[in-house]
Length: 80
Image (tube, rainbow, N blue to C red; front, top):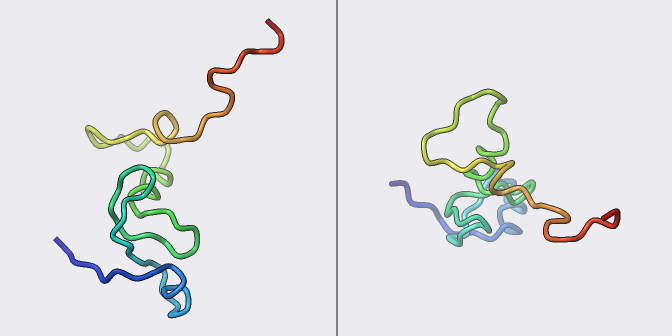
């Protein structure tokens, strides 16, 4: 297992790095390096950027079904 140096995003940005590591889990529970540009962890980015039609690994999470924020769930329709 690789070991990473813990560094803040601001420090990584100042040093011109593309990724940094906080040691904290992302909002989906992954403990992985994060991209300075948009703060996504590498695991979430891999799920989001998986090419269409590529089979998922067994036991992996489906971004659209499991992680994508939902709007309007549990709200009544104004037309009913």
